[in-house]
Length: 341
Ligand code: MRU
Image 1 (spheres, rainbow, N blue to C red):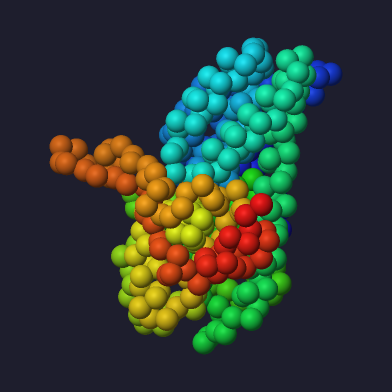
Image 2 (cartoon, rainbow, N blue to C red; image 1 turned 180 degrees about the vertical axis):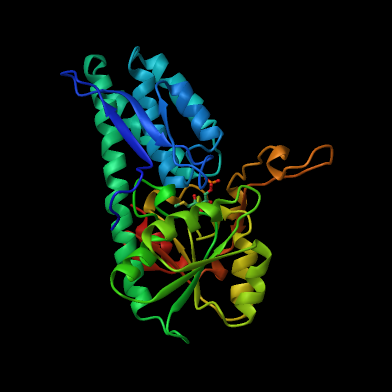
């Protein structure tokens, strides 16, 4: 789908026989879109910092990076107590994105079963597997989403799709989730145009605009508050957003501002889709009220000396969601339980 792109995460292979890594290189998303620079993460503390500071961000990429963080954390000490400490450190970095906790639980499950002598190798192997699976999962989300887009009526030469935050390749190892169907449609020759909302306060919309430009997909950046007007004016055929955690009943946590878009979409009869891998569905969370909402620093709003509340996510109730697109296909929130394994 993409050629010659700056990878979001890449392992630095050690030239040793044990097939373990020394470090991982991440694309520093706090420097984008101004400059594309890589940062080397050598230790689990480096990984925890990259996650907290959002040098690495986006639910699937957070999970992959955390898995590599576990591997880095075991490089010099693979004991049970070190494993527990490393997992606790990483788990505390971002509360809402369940892919983080999903990846850590998977690493823990596999590593607890592994003998101490092979644990380091197993950790790198499993982190690589999680990373590789992310790519395939997103290709699949793209294919299912493309099928839906192919059948979607459009009022204009192009299909106008609104998205929020960045749920593109930068939020994953490759292809993205919400943007995967858009890339697939673009590649299939379906004319698409993307309304990209700015996404205050962190402006992840700029990341979306950057990667859409990189891929040659027509797009227009808007202030978050312009979304309602455009939806009302009939300039939006459908919305596709990502997700940080989907509860068992389909209620969906995604970047703050998503809920208002879903409300506007419902008010004007515009379909509202969520695209996410199965690892974003938390069947242990019965409904949206149980999803922890991350509160971030006041400084992100760029003001000093005023009281600030900065919730990073909101909950879109299942009844506002037309469909959830995953690697299994497209389903309604009511039918989400069919994906429980
Ligand atoms: O705080 P962020 O930038 O990590 O939040 C990202 C989002 O809310 C994305 O929409 C979500 O993680 C889906 S990413 C494929």
